[in-house]
Image (cartoon, rainbow over all chains, first blue to last red; front, top):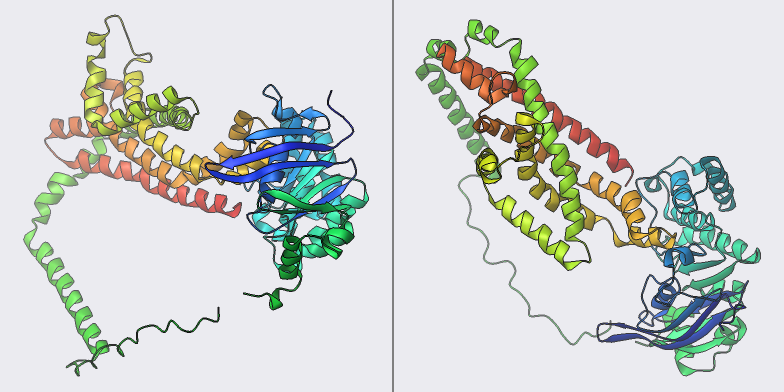
Length: 253
Length: 283
């Protein structure tokens, strides 16, 4: 019997790309309502881990459960499972041939089979949530990166997910636009959304996260409350990573 | 990086100083341009002097003969050219899309079939394909292409066009960033739903310019239906012009037909450029 009280449960997850082993046995859970930030150097496998949670990457071995449903089961209805999991990408991935409103309604209409009026109402509510209700008729190319990313968040939220995945949502943004996106994410966290966030924004992780997970070399090195993992790291790898990130001008080369 | 030990080999200061030129670069450019103009003017004068304009006009632009092409030039010939080429284009596009999707399929025999079709029909001359269609009833007794002569012409152009369309559309599908499929799938869309709503519409926009070229090329290839033995109400522009030219022993109809082709292809180029620009806004 699978436990249903976890929002996400991952058991002994392995992922190979050819001969390269990116994830070397990850065990990890997220509880409903928790905000978990995953930090770590590039190439540590944190994005791959996130992409395994909605099976955009097929794990080589191990099990992934979302709300008690095993996504790694061979007979799982993956499309149905993904409806419950919103995903926000580093490169936004808005649909460039559609207006903002169409971006936010298309999956509601085609996947959830919601009517036109209902899907547009929900879309406008969610655009309002991210502060972009006046951009409904614009095309993505007419928006700034920060605005595009907020539309992407609204698009995911419009599917009424129970879990949101963020894959370095601010890494492609100009520095002055990062704040808008983080504010939206913070608001979402305060409203009780379950969130799994891969990020380099240490201030966000420290302030918003309930838990911070530090990954390096395909394994979880440290996992705990932000005060502990960021404030008082136990492992040398965590300490050295945080030194580089928090004080980049004094890094030893 | 603070490593300064690897000093690069000092390169020479750009070779020896150039010898003093007889003309400055500006002067040379002026002379070159003057020469080009002189050549142009001489060529124009030669053409004017040596061409027998009266005979040329008599043979290629005789108003009485030109008048004889109307109204059938438009009501029959152009109409048929458009029927053959638009029909061929529509089917070539649809079949090309199926072939492109097969080419990207995860089912290996589909990939092979598609590749074989593309390699064969891309490599054959269009004329040969029309001749094959002509002999099709011999090869398959009792078989008849639906739609009669129109059907045969459209079939020929479909076969000619679809192999090229397949490759163009495949390139278009592959040019859509991978993140688009991932975003669509992450919203719970199935693979085919994502293809239909997200990927194919973007791919089609990407291939508008090469597709316009292909339509123009089909329009021209539609002249090959004359090898199917079309006559009367089925003739298209080239056959029409050729027949009239024989009748009057005068080349004017050929010129008229040529201009008629351009009446279609040139506006089409502009339309495509406008479409491309409009789609560009959404990128």
